Amino acid sequence: MLSYRHGFHAGNHADVLKHLVLTLILRSLKKKDKPFCYIDTHSGAGGYSLESDFSTKTGEYHSGIEKVLSNTRLREAVPEYFEVLDQLNSKEKSLKYYPGSPYIAASLMREQDSLDLLELHPAEYENLKYNMHFARNAHVHYRDAREGLNALLPPKIKRGLILIDPSYELKTDYHDTVKMVKNAWNKFPNGIYAVWYPVLGKAIDESWGFTRELAKIGAPGTLKVELCVKEADPLRGMHGSGLVILNAPWGLDKELNEILPEILESLKQNENGRFVLSWLTEEK
Ligand SMILES: C[S@@+](CC[C@H](N)C(=O)[O-])C[C@H]1O[C@@H](n2cnc3c(N)ncnc32)[C@H](O)[C@@H]1O
Image 1 (cartoon, rainbow, N blue to C red):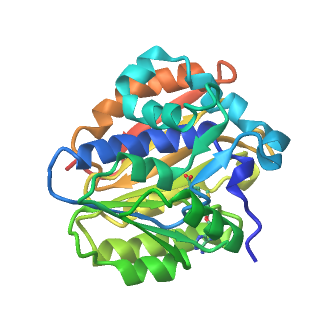
Image 2: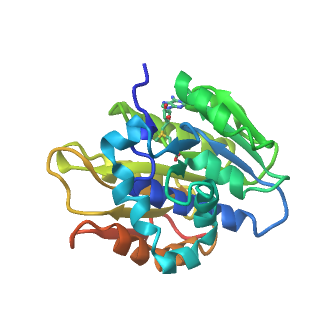
């Protein structure tokens, strides 16, 4: 039984980091005219109202997307991300909606590219279908991430990005995610894999061991990017998040190195905010 609803968290600091990284990887794939595929194994609803009961209950976007909107240096460095956001909110002239990863990807991808979007929560699947109506090259699946990814790989289009963004509701999700990535990489070693993870208070944090296990898969160019907005809460709460990127595209580290100080400047909640950018396996 799935209980996680991303609407509670849409537009928070973790979404901002994840979606900026997503945008940069898509940018690099678009450097060639050749088509590419995008697979989102845990798609969520695709788009979120920041006035919904979910969002107003937590108000997480106030310390996320709302903080970066006025960062002009970040806007100049990653204009595509802000264009998607501005377009989505153009009628409202204020921040009312936040796009999910499938929406951002579909907005930035081209006619020749294709998207496969997997989601297992029945209500989120219906929302996703509705929100992705505009994307004619998107296939929306009511399907388990692991089973679906295994079936979709290797893809017909031999270059692409797989975003793996589980909700980590169960402790076993970490181990299962590593297994899923390993299996996927064996079937499609040319793919770029971006795996999201939370950074939690010490008593329950799994991030260090998790990133090490992902590095052990042995894919070339495994890059880790992590942003913590404050110090760890000893017992609970997410104070940071990160992505491990296997087969990271050439130049991604340099682009991230330029924007991470800006993201941190906008999102840090006190002087204990920090970021990490490091190669876990040798750069390609
Ligand atoms: C963190 S949210 C996704 C957010 C989205 N990727 C974004 O960035 O906008 C995780 C989603 O995974 C879904 N989910 C959980 N377990 C799943 C599974 N086994 N297969 C597919 N989807 C699953 C949840 O219902 C939830 O909507």
